[in-house]
Length: 474
Image (cartoon, rainbow, N blue to C red; front, side, top):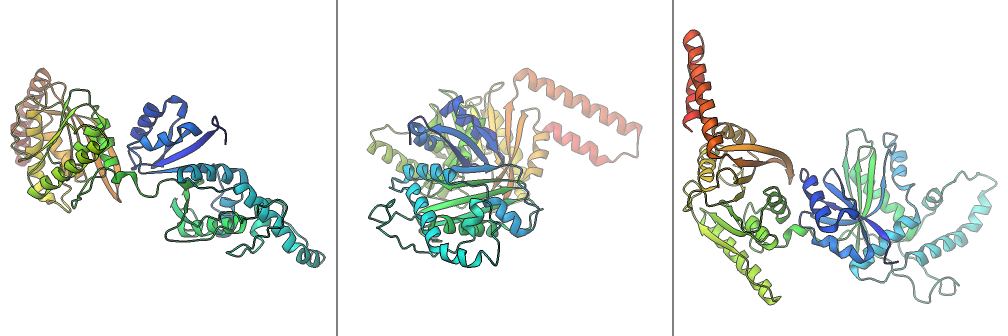
């Protein structure tokens, strides 16, 4: 494998954060990586000498090498034909190049070329007599390599003959593997498990790799999205989001999600960044590790503060053992509706707010969100302050943002998938003094106009006027 060879890699990200992960990839790996994004994934190119730099990406969960991306497949046929369509386009060179990248990450000695040569030769020798006997009775209609290989039964263990001139004396290494399937689309006649089973059968027939569902060497990925498919080999044994946290709470935020939220906040060197509801400290820890800013975390729950301090202490201990300094981060126990901070003292606020499921309740969120956003507006710098807030209680947040619109202006709203829950990330901008006064004046004019209409039309509902008054006083 030459140093200037380019390889195609992919990474899984939280659905909704694909563009954020793509921007990070371009920033850290350069425009020559040609980063692009798909649903829940990003794809990019790297040469051999830069392959390990892909592990520096902080917004990705899993990294994999792409065997092949298949576009415009006819997957609306019968189940058998559709599954054959997934495998028939994969060539030996596709697998050979991908396995070489996999061996580089794993540090293994594996030669797929010799194995392919052996299998082709052994199958030809073992089945010559049977083919000759049946050729007069049943004509062969196999026209492709994959059809020929799929028609030959292969045992789980191969009997290597050292006398074969093209083989070394020792048998080649056969990695144990399993196939994981993922499918999106409602017009398929097969399930993700059936797609994974077909790909596993294809690899057993072609290379003789033994299947092992647990403690396997290699994980092959089959991702089907409507009429497109991506085949890959996983390069990370466990998700990269577990890198910072040792002491987990019931709602600990993944480090990859924390990184994406921080990037939306656009931290600058010297900024004071706060997570007023930090839980286990995922957001301030991730920020202190990657940005030259000062990070402050706090929570009203004493156990959450203990977990945050323990995670910070463990990270500082790890950094000191590596010769690095301590993180610029502190943890304080406080009430988010009454923060012990000066007015206009924070540059950015990034926080994962209670969803009202495992922590808190949807009913309590109405008052908590209103008071929290007003207090965040007090401590955040007018005109330049930003806030990035995550919540699954979208209805409550939408109503509260209308009530505090004189303090916060919504810039971006992203829908993301967190473990099957569709939540929203809100990027807010703190209004300046002039802008805030103008907004309050506009709200007052709107309220006066509404009151005039109510006097002119006695049939209007009185609660509408009361709601407008509540929005103004908030």
